Length: 194
Ligand code: DHK
Image (cartoon, rainbow, N blue to C red; front, side, top):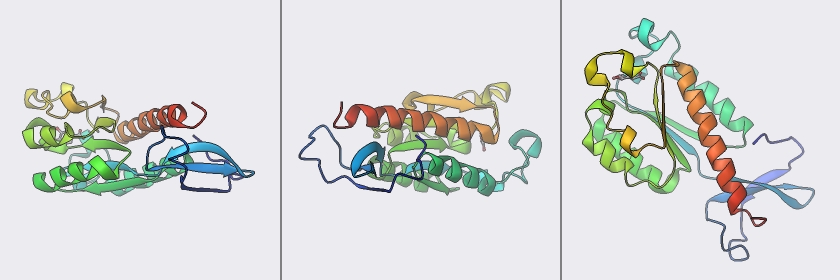
């Protein structure tokens, strides 16, 4: 949801008791003293697995010329235009990825995950993802189905809400747009007007 400049501020909602259907972790925008819109106060986690720190240098014909920092910057702007925050991270370590996915259970409103090569190998990542109730978008820069057969299998897909691959950096932007829409429609049904 775009956040017009006239919306004065967003803050943690304090009226959960008055509106029992409303969950902790959702915030509201006020306009002229009235609640104008609801947004999740928790960030959208965007987690990246092994070797994604090297994009821009590594196999640019497959992964593109842009860096992970370029992708992060674009996503931060996209989220902020919707009044949302992202928590963007990268690790080369499977256990760290599992820890972050577990952290997302309570700290994230949604998860966008490019698990890199762990997509094709990690039952631990799949098990961690299955513990999440938030929406999950699986993302890949490349079209994994056009590549080697071992990349056609994903341990992330069975736990994901949806999968986007093959659009380069745009895969992330499309995933974020989808997550924003899901969160907005969820906010609309949770608000006191529902
Ligand atoms: C990135 C990787 O590092 C590979 O191991 C995956 C994925 C594909 C991507 O396209 O973003 O197979």
